[in-house]
Amino acid sequence: MIMLSPNRKKAFTLIELLVVIAIIAILAAILFPVFGRARENARATSCSSNLKQIGLAFLQYTQDYDETYPLAGGTLKFKDPDPTKPRSWMEQIFPYTKSEQLYKCPSDTFSNNGIDSKYSYFMSARAAYISAGNVAAATREVSIQFPSLFVTGGDADSSIFDVEDADKDDYSNNLMGSGVNGTKPYDSKRHLGGQNILFADGHVKKMVNFNPQGFTFRYDTISGW
Image 1: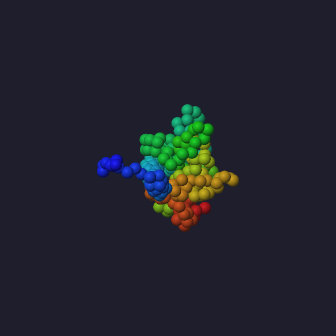
Image 2 (image 1 turned 180 degrees about the horizontal axis):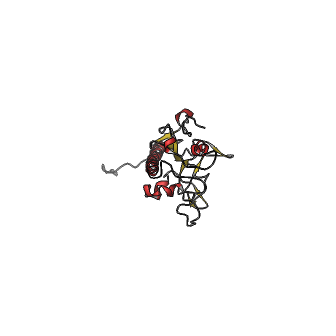
Image 3 (image 1 turned 90 degrees about the vertical axis):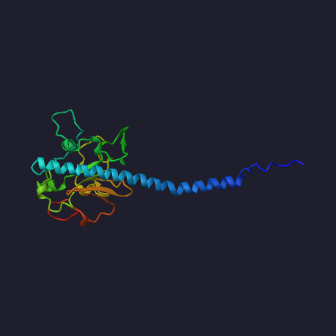
């Protein structure tokens, strides 16, 4: 009679192996979305930090330039070699930010013709435009009566703009949430259905639902439009 060694290990059966694989697959299906959300939350936090530094640069700029924000308008490249063109708002505050990377949201993955988006944020323009009689003008800090509710910037839908445009601006109400530029909708809610918004007092808030009474684009009234 052949005796089996007591130390010989029994191998997995096919059924047991399939059960283990199924358990691993279930755990992966549960954990991967959690890890994905954690990564996106980290990116959203980094984006919020970028906007806070941009907000601080705005405040420093206004102290040096008679309480006015940079003038924004048009499609402008960062450090455009053409001396006849105005400087983008991102370039105007660059002496305070000191980092071009600050203008890129880590969740902004838009690319056009092989060129990745480098500039991810918009600057508010509506209040100054209306106040000046529907012409381009710089926002006046002294005119802002609700600084904790007045939108000065935030995540922009890079697909709407030229990927090299360092002067992203528009009527801010268009850029909030799912506004519309002509016939094309914006999609600026890149952070798990939310959008980071910068306010005039320097704080940044991730907004998912947009209550018109919770922010303003005008100097002296609470109005989402």
